[in-house]
Image 1: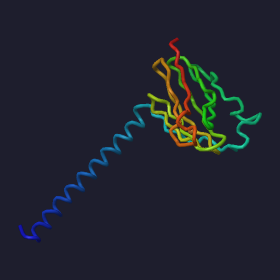
Image 2 (image 1 turned 120 degrees about the horizontal axis):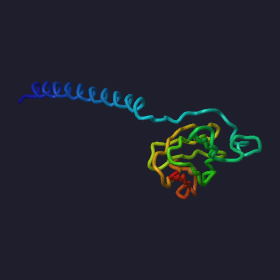
Image 3 (image 1 turned 90 degrees about the vertical axis):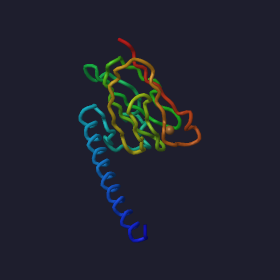
Image 4 (image 1 turned 135 degrees about the vertical axis):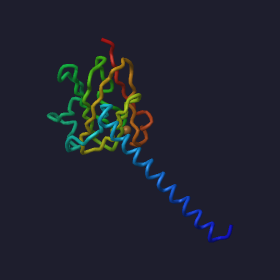
Length: 165
Ligand SMILES: [Cu+2]
């Protein structure tokens, strides 16, 4: 094959490749849209702004990190992710409970990832991150900080205990 023919062959092949890649991307987008409607995925959102320097003070939502029952089988957790622990360090909810997490940081950026679930929030000082999850299986869930936050990062873990009713 001379050079001219080879170039045309490459171009033809490249065109099919581009078309195939485009079709695949569209298929991915359709599947992403489908998961948002059909699987109760909750994308973390920034619920509000908060002053990280006073977040632990009296009167702040996070002065007393806690989980409280806020409805029929609904629990609200106010979580402080700080160097190098989560407060409260242990959250207990019954099986089947929907938990609304509000998470913020008084110092640097942290991660809030609940192992075995798709809860994965970037915790940014100054912002309150909000995410929801329904725990349909009893057991112990590990909470992991997956955003580098300093020398104690690798030990920054918490626990969620889902109790069988
Ligand atoms: Cu951390």
